[in-house]
Length: 199
Image (cartoon, rainbow, N blue to C red):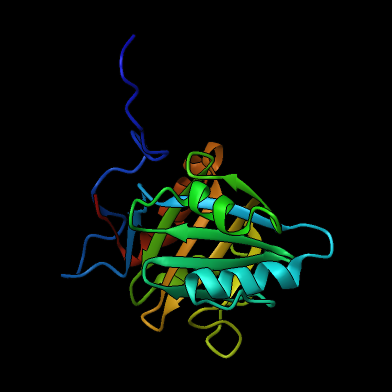
């Protein structure tokens, strides 16, 4: 029996390099797959949301957002996904599901999403311009800024989106099976600005 090697949802789909408009030294949009993230979905058990919030605060020093927001500390983020639901995102290779289950399993259902979701980081001076062509939400800075999050539709695909900073930088999570569809849409949407795919 051979060892299984993880494969990016974007393998064979995202080709590193410049796409679309070639003029200019810097592309208007930069895209990078966020492979290697640990992802988990938390759903509060009935009547235990307050206990869950207390446990997260005690264990991780974070207050779970109760509105469409993202909170982060020490490489661990919680992104609001709906009432009593969050997407946990870890960048440091920790065994996120095991850690969360041990810390909050009495108060929430914890399910591994690491292989079920694909995440793209989209940044650059024209990132917002490219995204608004197919994102079912107003991304104007007056209405959506750093640490804001949304469950939305991108080019007819269900997605979760959050903004990291004012650059602007966004991250988009979609079901793994839709990674190719979302990338093809984004590639076309960003073409007029030039799109740089980073490995």
